Length: 102
Image 1 (cartoon, rainbow, N blue to C red):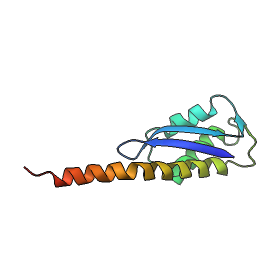
Image 2: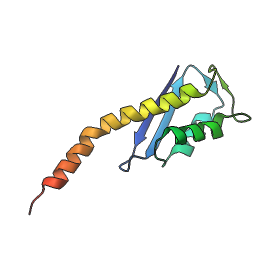
Image 3: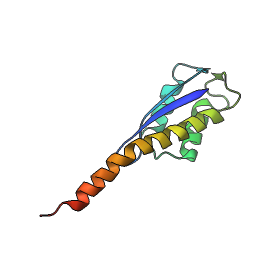
Image 4: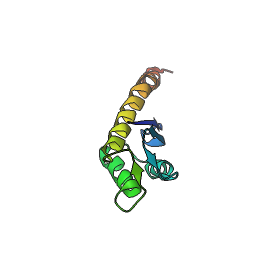
């Protein structure tokens, strides 16, 4: 299995990415992937590009996964969870900003 966690900044860009699971890779693989994604807008294509540049053919090895698709799926799921957690605070901020009167 693969699990991911992401943190989104105020502009909905990735500020933190972590991976975990029952797979093995070179020590710097997950850190390099996180570095490549930091500051990017989360999307399937951004995730796929960073995964391919980090773990694609001729790059770092990944053992325990038959394909890289679980990494992609985990990042998308983590992004959805992060957006759900952020939604109430973003909505509250919008309401407060819109309801202030002199």
